Image (cartoon, rainbow over all chains, first blue to last red):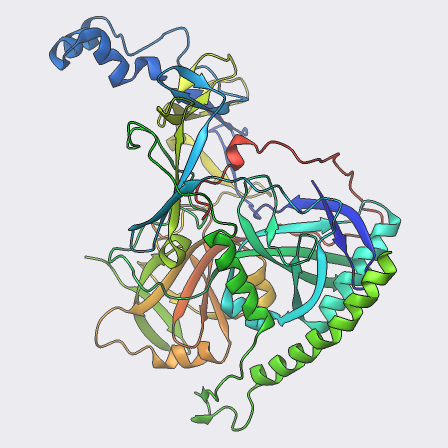
Length: 332
Length: 205
């Protein structure tokens, strides 16, 4: 994958944009110490599920007898085959369909439905003619870590000698500032990052580290603040799911016919939330003096460290404005 | 009854309960309903490579196979490290005292996040003000975490706080690589493309 990004001088370049995988130092071996692999198999298909079998047998009693005598739920030829190159398709009662009307059912945190609207799939904006913008809006690493949850990460890597220098300089500036930089997309440079058509929008923050003559540039992606929900379920869930919500498509539970939907508003609720998060970076408030547990007295009496940083950031942002004008002219 | 998670900091132990939180609880959620041209409801199924076999949820299974393609019982497998050393199963974090160690913000930012929990006192006797005060200063702590135990590779749990609450962020360290001049990568000819089915997100707001 590629990303088109602009540096502080307003120059842009297309570089590689790679997913990051977790470190794992564990492998499984069989009794002889030989490596093993995991393979996905076909267990059953829709023609052999309960609904399909019931259509042929009419009632459960007849079906249960057939299950014992004839094994109609098993296709000896197909079941157990390796599954590769699968794809997802929409199926209605007419079979596979290619023209689909998708409706978004938006629910509030308490589960009540807020609105139903047609789904609009925005295009990706990381590799277009308009490069992602170096906004000049920095946020201290510590503060960012305490305010946002960075659910996804992507690494930026050079594709030739020129882009090595390009990315190294960016990483060095961020490393020296010990800050993350807000990255925005779109012509006005005010949009969150969308990595695939119809994908989720994310607030993207660029992190840079330097180790000798090597660099690390990571795009930290967040769509969630670190805060306690107003409404919370009582029972803790198990640790099997991730923060990435699973894809949910209503099939059986959906209404029998398409209900009326409202016209989609120009700005989705998701965009509003992402904008709200981004506003945190742009608009910082002075933090009240905190109590130090070691000394038993306020850690700061006049201005906290955070407040000082906020002042610095504000001035940085102000400084960035004339620069962005200069960038615009240099681009021409 | 839920069990407490025992955290230990500077010789003091705290029994806490943890509750999982996610984005839907903060901002709400979105579900997708799909319809064909005539308004009949449609559902999303998996199409096998043969172009005709349709699978619903639960239609697939995972099998462990050896080099020759024979199926192997998972109970007979051994976990080993890259060096070939056998790894023993870890115990659930709810069965042990979890010692908190200071962590750097870079460690925390290197995590691929799996789960987020909010911390509360397990009972009325537990006072978290000591740990809360340290977290409010901006300190981040970490400890190895396994929810159920029995696994062989515990996750990293980071204890982090904002002004009012404390959280545990569970994840795995990302495999970052510092890039050098001679490590350029080939650029894919990526144009805007139809989204891969696996990448479709249905909880867009």
